[in-house]
Image (cartoon, rainbow, N blue to C red):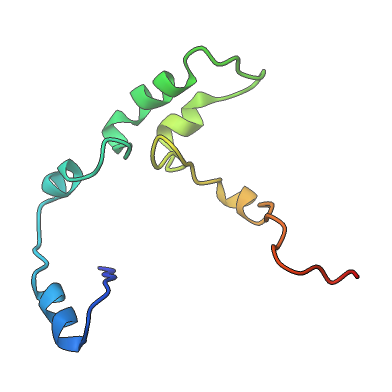
Length: 99
């Protein structure tokens, strides 16, 4: 599967952009990622580095971060499926319904 997003002046320009895409190996693709992306092979070391010096609560299991797919990059993590439905949403901005 491939997802491609672009802004183009017209369909012809968009098709040129799509035509410029090239298939690359997994290693080439991973090498092109920014340093903030955590590669699965580096995940355990990155987790240990990120948690160094942080007091952890009793029962905290860093192995879940090291082995799972929760850790995507150094700045954001994906909550586990059980927590996704409980995410808090920020309050809506704009006019309040109260007067």
